[in-house]
Image (cartoon, rainbow, N blue to C red; front, side):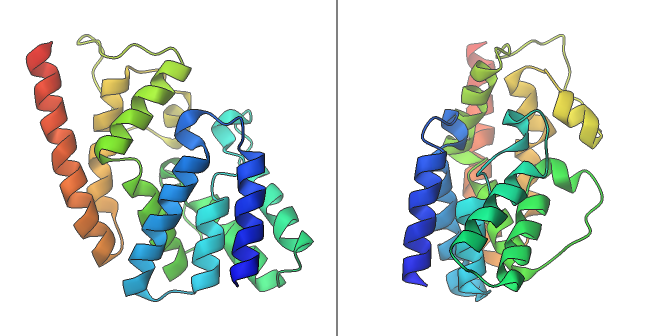
Length: 211
C-alpha cells in the first residue's frame, strides 16, 4: 500500500501544480491527514480512504466548465495505470462523484463508510480558520464582493443555483460553511467540526463589529 500512496501523491502534486490556492496540493494534504485521523477511529478500508482523499479534487468540476465526470475519469485512468483492482477504482470514483457539498444538494445514489470518512475530512477543511481563508481565496479568484448587506443569503438553493451563485463571500458562510457541522457523519468528524464552527461564529461577530 505504501508504494501506491507514494505514486498517488506524486501524481496529485504534479497534476495540481498550478491549481487555485484553495484546491491545491496543500488542501489535498490537509484532507488526507484529516481522513487518516478520522479513520484511525472509524476503521474503514484504509487504501480506499487514502486514495479517495488524495484524488478527490484531481479535476474539480467548477474549474472545468462544470464537467462533473472529469475528476472520476482522470482518477480512474490513473488508478488503472498503476494496476489497482476494478473494485477499488470504482469505489474511489463513486466517492469522488458524491463527495462535494453541491452533490449533496442533488440525489445521492451511493453511500459507504469510506465516503463518510473522506467527506467529513474534506468538509473540515471548508470550516474554521482554513475554511475562512479558502472562502475568501475563492471569492477573490471569482472577483466577488466581500460583503453586501443588501444581498441576503439564499438558504434554499438548488444544486444548479448553488453552482451558478455569484453572491458575496460572507453569504457563503450561511449558505454552506455554517451548515457543515450538522452534516458530519462520523463521531470524530463531529468533534473536530464543533471547534472550527465556533471559530467561524466568533469571526463573523468580529467582522460585523468592524463593519
